[in-house]
Length: 167
Image (cartoon, rainbow, N blue to C red; front, side, top):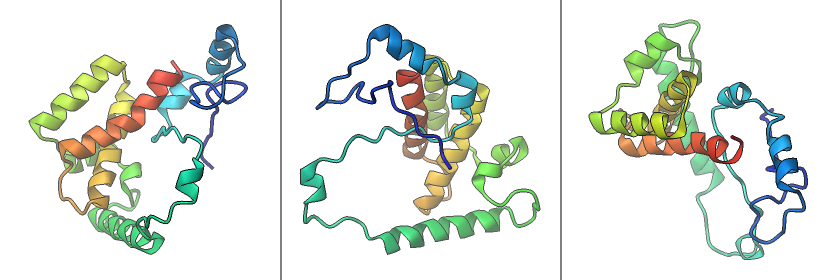
């Protein structure tokens, strides 16, 4: 089960349609209940806003679940093949430092993206490794042999939510 966290005790801080009833001190105290080191161990931090009526009632077609499932299965197969010689690793999330160095090589542009993110967001070494692993997974989902700057950028986005909201 993945941790879920409201932005404040009433749950409406930052909501565009509902007003937060919490005071600044109350919000700060609430956010301090979850530690930075714990947040650092969560790979993906995603804000999920309330669903609008127009989105629920839309007749627009989205990507089918079967297509998404097939893409995920192909990515998992690629990861299993990548780590077939390592009994302890079967997916990107389980990579250790040696596998990260081997399978998460980045271009100069991607390296610069991570350098800026590490500096500007004050990210930890653990966050750096997680960004590399997540960008490798995003590349696998896109059927790409290398993590591009776009993949790295997306992975960095999954780390910024905790820095802007919880710190």
